[in-house]
Each structure stands twice: as structure tokens, then as C-alpha cells.
Image (cartoon, rainbow, N blue to C red):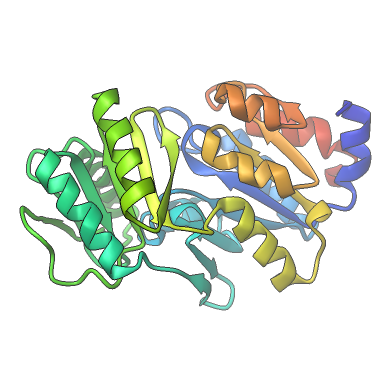
Length: 285
């Protein structure tokens, strides 16, 4: 789509959704000052802001705080939607307990780095590599005076399998990842997506960031064409498919680049601020 066409469409945008890792966050896991200023200009014009991430809700509070308070949070790839202004959950879906059990048992048997994510504790296997990301988040939260995520370790079936929002599998062996995908397809009623290299997000079927955006639009009483979405990876494509304006970062995956209406600079090169300035220039002036 041509830039002039995007500028014309920008006047009707009422909701802008930002993926987090690789999009809103730089490689050092911070949001640039220019991005914050650009987003604030959107908010001053009455445009609502959403964070859309594969992360759990409790791992997003510090970033909402940094933004000055996002209006909506889409977590676990669309499995949960929260209206932060009203302090209520618009949507929250859990993995069916029996399917969750099957996946956990498979991961334990295959010695996979499998993380079980809930609104309470997050569970990790011993020697997990993924736990480092959660420990890093806790350090950021502690510095900001925010609540840390409770980290627990497991080596057998956990007691509460009824409130798992997502199962995250980090596996460097591609062959083992493919076997895991085949198991999910053939032995469960679950689905999966990829949010980063070597990372498999397992969730209930019918969940996507795009589906969550459609629900927020209905909740707000706006059309899908009044949504703008920023993203960088395959799990952001569903947002691109429903948004009136879809913007991929310069560092985006090949599939995300192909699905976008517009490609900006990378997350480390002020891609957010540049795209907002170029596309919304007439709106925020």
C-alpha cells in the first residue's frame, strides 16, 4: 500500500496495537524515548493503545507502566484480553486440562525445556534456559517497584493444570521441535505458533492476536479498519490480516514482511517513531 493511502487511512484509526519483543522493545528490552513520545502523541489525539504479546499478563505490567498506561493488554497471543482502564478481563482462556497434561507428560519424557505459564506462578524445568528471561523481567520490575513473577520449578506433573494460559517450549534441536509439533497436532486439541526462533507457543485452539483485536474492536464499537497493528514475527500476522493498517518492523520475519502494508525501520533503529511520524503526520501535528 502506498504511503499516501496509509496517511489517508490514518485519520480513521482509533486503536493502535504494538507487539512487544522485536517491535516495541529494542534489543536491550527497553522502549526508546522517541517511541514513547510518538505513542503519547497518538494518545493525546484520543487513539487507544494496546500491547499485544505472547507473554503472560503479569510479565507486561512494567511495559504498560512505561507507556504511561496502555488501554488494553493482549497476552498469551490472544488467550487473554484486559481492559486496564476498567481493571477487568474482557477475555481469558485456559488450556483444556487433559490436553495440558498430555503436553506436560510428553515434554518431561522428551526432556524439553517446557515452561507452564499461569497468572500466578510460572513453572520451569530444572536447568531451563528460558527462565533467564523471566529473571531478567523480575529485575526490571523490582527496579520499577512492581510485582515480580513467582518462579517455581517442577520435575513431575504440577497440581493445578486448570489455569495454564500457555505452554512455552524452547528447543534448539529442530528435529525435536518438529516431533513436538506433530504430537500437538495428532494427540491434542491444542494449537501452536512461533513467537521467536526456537520457541514454540502452545495454546488453546481459536486463539490469535488478530482474533483478540477483533474482539477489542467489537468491545470498543469500532470497525477493524480503524485498527493499526505493529509487529515483527509470524504470530503477528493474524493482526496484520484484520487491521486497516499493518506495519512490519525492518527486522521482521519473511512472512510478516510479506503480510504487512508497510515496512518501517528495525526495532533498534526507531522503527516505531519513524512509522508514526510518516503515517500519522497529519493526525498528530
